[in-house]
Amino acid sequence: MLRKYSNLSNRKTLKKGIYISLIMIAVRPLIDFFPSLREAAIINIGGLWGAIVFLAIISLFSVYIWSKKNLKYSYIIMLGPLVMIFCFYVINLIILKSTGIIVDISRFLIGFSPFLLIPIIMELSGKINSKKIFRTFYLIFALSLIPSVVITFLQFFEIWEGLYGLYGGQERATGGYFHPGHFGRFILMFTFFSYIAILKNLFSKRFVYFLILTGWIATFFSGHRTSLALISLIVLSGELFRVKEFLFTSFKLKKSKMMYKISGFILIIVVLIISLPTVFEAEQMQTMLHQNLRSFRNIPDRIMVDDQIFDDRFLNNRGLRWNRVVNFMNDQPRYVKIIGYGETIHDAHNELLHRYLNSGILGIVLLYGIFFPLLLVFMIKSSDKKGRYLSLLLLICYVFFGVPLRPSNYPNFMWLFFTGLIFILLLCNKTQKSDELRYNRKVQ
Image (cartoon, rainbow, N blue to C red; front, side, top):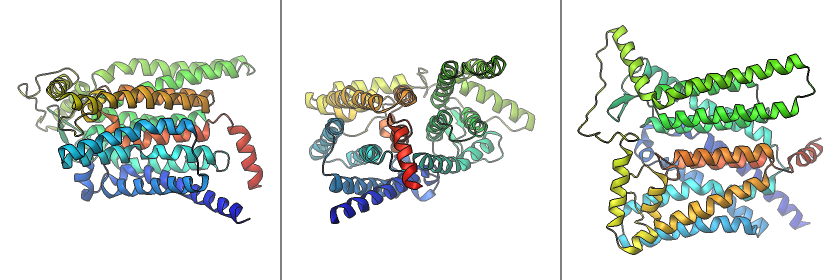
């Protein structure tokens, strides 16, 4: 009797903990606005808020371990590479005794901490109202993004000056953050969550499409091409998936109604295809629009380009950065090449090179040869058709985002990445229908 009461109490604690943890992640766009966190935001930790979320997740995981007392072998195998990478960081901290390594350890631990929520989610699947949790998270996340979207529009049209950032020789709207990419990654992940909402019919499609379009335009105004390209990829692939689903499930509808919906899908796809070339020239078009706007308002042009500094035009100076990291690692001892230097002393601007610099060749093998492939297999086995599609899409976005950037080093991005996987497990689980019926019966 006491054990049954204890398990019930622990389950309630886990449910409340999941709610609170996801809401704390949803308000991250607002947290990064506070001036007191500006210095911490530059290193992408999120200051005190990042530490609070990390401790909350660790506490929740501890409660789960205490009540469950075992973990599935598949999860332990996935957790193993992350533990080993953490050990590499600790070894380098002991050897080099550099405070910079502590920063990278913090980024790694805080960013990957939501992964600890996955076994709890699998345990609670069918015992919580997944749709209600998602709707709450989505609305809070959308409300948290409103200030940055409004500021981006105000910055672009020169109504609110003083919050621009000078990147790549150009002034670009940042949405109130320290870099346009900071804003772009929030909109990127919001677009992904929007397609979860669309595919699961959790909100009015007109409402969700309006939010997607607003985010796309705001990202275009910021000139962050990587985020803009991936947002377009999500929208295009999402619409293609919807067309496929529609063609296979709507054969019973009347022919006229079917053709009406198909023409709507085709129109969306055509518009997206036409707009895709603007992704690759986003900065140039943004500059042209700015110059025309300033000419109309008789504002002096302030766009500056220094060819002596930004002489490598490949992916906006990425080639020079990659070459610098490779040359640095080539000059290091063999053990550094194996377990990494442990500290981001060079901004690699590439996921593989960043991991090579921080965790060496073993870090690359552990994270990208073991952890992520096993994670994909786990998601495919645990999800239905829509869940498999969304899981693959999210990992593809991660891969492409990692070409010019280093997503594993951005805790705010990793929080949202794992949150996306969590909602896929909650909403697209293979046993979801039977679990929902069981939950509804208990509620009634």
